[in-house]
Length: 110
Image 1 (cartoon, rainbow, N blue to C red):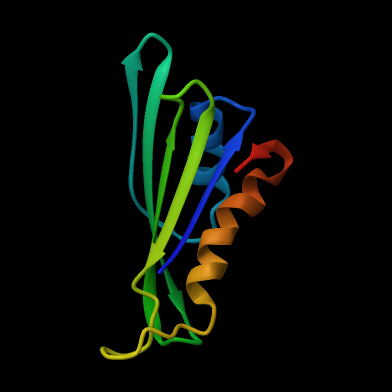
Image 2: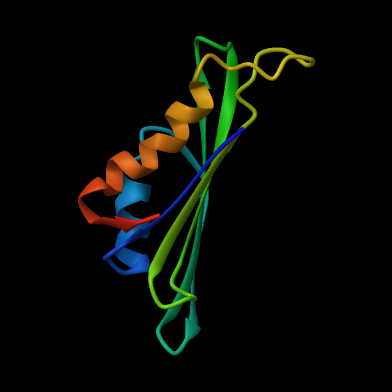
């Protein structure tokens, strides 16, 4: 499992659309909710097969502006090879970092 958390200077809906449209993985689920008063909460779930682990990995991306700035959290899981070993040859880190790669021009902090 690998995690990443950072803030961006664009709206949650803009960040949501960029990640959804540019992620090179199968989109399994998406939802974007307007909570009122300009607050948004978005969830994206992707799945991707990694040859190096001979396994599918899941990527969950949460995007919101509940604290006033757009916060992006990404979590990759399910990428380890085998049932007893939690070793994935860097697949989870690669999957998680793909989100910051997509949004790199807009990142303002961690």
